[in-house]
Length: 318
Image (cartoon, rainbow, N blue to C red; front, side, top):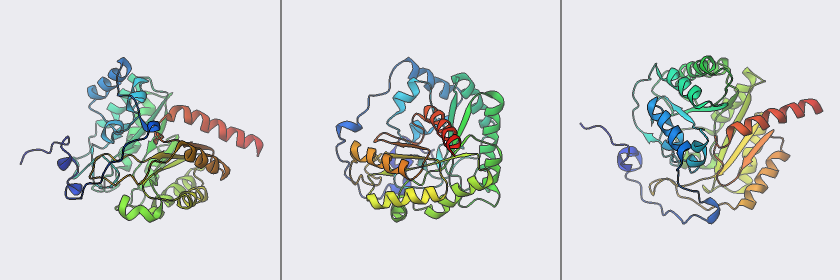
């Protein structure tokens, strides 16, 4: 049997191959971005290739890759480039992943040092095939970066550890990342069609549990809009996040990777995003990023500095 070619959609997403095509509507002017180019972009790409690292920037087809990579900002994706889940919005390949690479944490740390990052975002595929969901691998990667680049702040974007053995989340929190991010992705009513392998209240509880384990750790979560949700649903998610004491909210426009993926219900206008941002700050989030091109890791370093400043201001005024 020949190996899968992840550049071919039917092999990249075998679970979606027989789905009917969804028309991809024309993007409005506010969603257009320049094609990746420039020396900074090339340098970042070369360092990723040299260290044999995957990035969510490429695997998920992020529209901001050109801007971020030109500044040397890449979001590392650990534990391989094949996910055990098949979310209908996501462009990361689905299937049976390879065994975990014990040398990967060191390679990530070396790349972080070589890029000279002040702030790094580390994410992963879902690894339901591993007993702890990859929690110890996350912890080892955090420790390796701390050792190799002690001045770098670390933000992690984790899976939900839904099928992981008890104590897995604790392994990650004990490694002391500066920001713990896990995305709720959408409103609960859309989970069966958007995140069929996940559970809304489990994801919410995961973030609440992080704060119980370490009240000083910043927590972060994000959703996409344009999947078919309404404003009331988004407002309820904000309330649920605040009840779980989540500090930082990101909201961005869903963009359909291929015709086999979940359809774009509509393009949310910049004015609507501004309205969501105002509402979220009114509910008590320390930090909010809500624009059409907002993604979890977009401007993460600058946002982390603002997040810390917001907490200091809140404590000073308490």
